[in-house]
Length: 348
Image 1 (cartoon, rainbow, N blue to C red):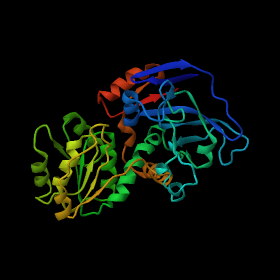
Image 2 (cartoon, rainbow, N blue to C red):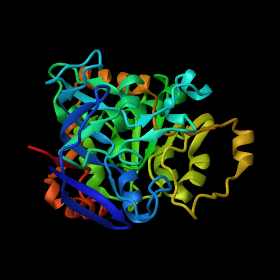
Image 3 (cartoon, helix red, strand yellow):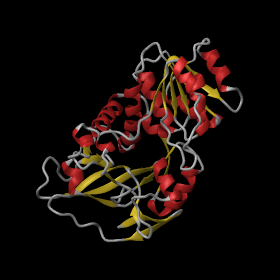
Image 4 (tube, rainbow, N blue to C red):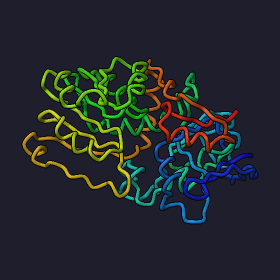
């Protein structure tokens, strides 16, 4: 089989390797589709502390496929089932895991980081992922293109649950990429009074029209604060989501929020640029709530899958470009150049 190994910074090699053997407590997944995430791009550029220097790893944690082998001791699964795999595998016994926050486990392992991930033709699902509930059946009638988006959608759903959007809320999302679109879909589905998306890219803003009736602000042409006041009749944003990795946007979010507003610092910042000066008097006197989320729990992953299954939005349209595994270097360059929305590796 073919597997794309991250070998060093900005180096991925496609190799012919044997199909993984599995034990009686493991499963083998034939990958159908795997998307390139922002995390994959950061690992590609900067490495990861869980991938030791000199080691190699198959990246990719947004993945779906078909079970082709199921160990004799595995219960609840059978060959031929279509499944997705939630990437973060907790230890199962720590306080975070017991409370349902497997993604916050201090001893977590993850597909595409500490386990080989989805950029290979066949992926072994280890016992820990099987027994802890990371393997999730894809609902009947749902396409692989929809199901593979459950992972990033669940991360947005984590943020959405914390923000508790109400029908009277003006919601501002800064960043019109695939993550921004997912946030917008969730908040519009919740009945927000108005969902506003802001970005410097007119082409990306234009692509947002296919996912909902959003108000679009091109910040290359007009100042965001003035445009927001116009669109909210001077009120400001009740909810602000920074769906981009720009330090200045986090600071600006405090200015844009209405009194009693909620702010989600969703996009993580690059190392070395992760200290931001915040005008804390704005938090104090406007009584703002500033929150952040990372990843998602298994429950949120399953909830996200169910939301996608019942939503009428063409969320699969977020996947704008697909490549074969032999062209994965080109696929990474394409994704990192910000072309299209989601870039995926497709396996026939």
